[in-house]
Image 1 (tube, rainbow, N blue to C red):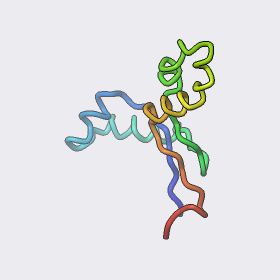
Image 2: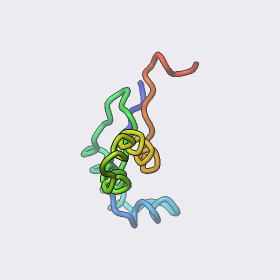
Image 3: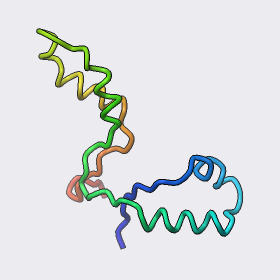
Length: 94
């Protein structure tokens, strides 16, 4: 069975402290619900970035400097990438 990348939402406390000790039954239940409600990322997805923060890097660009906006967007997104792109099966090295 193939792996999937899944986005889940859990408390910061559980994410930071929960893995340092055995989970309580309540924490197990929270994790199971989070996985069940998770959002699967599509195969071959591109980079997932905090675009709002990336845009802040370039929102003051005006006039002739705007020609560089595409490069700036690429740079800003690269600095704010949260999850890297998923390689297509044909790109995966064996």
